[in-house]
Image (tube, rainbow, N blue to C red; front, top):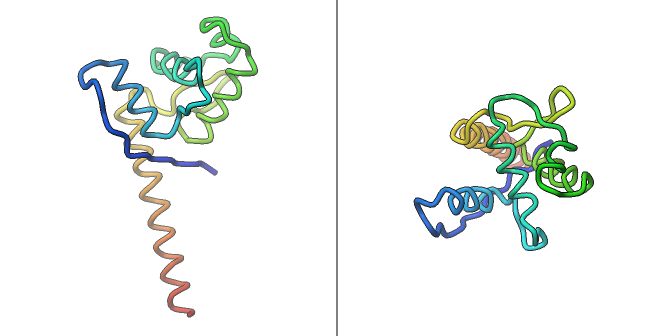
Length: 128
């Protein structure tokens, strides 16, 4: 089960990679106000930089970012639930090795979900 969240967020600071990455993550519902030290954003950036399909362990992420392993695992679970991160070979990595492919995969997931919702709604309508 994946939770796909899309939020329409006003884009600020176009052309600034950091702002654009923040906007992308916010639009995907990854970051929230409780993430005061931007730990989820920092983990996301670490995984993007490591997107050559070499998994990175939660311990390595925690060490690099000076975060507790518990904090890292909490955010990794959130990223996995959203379908953005996968666990592989005792580590974690982005589902795709670049952001454009990642967004296309998420789009396909959403389209598939809406196709199924449409079919079930049709069946319900026909029975009522």
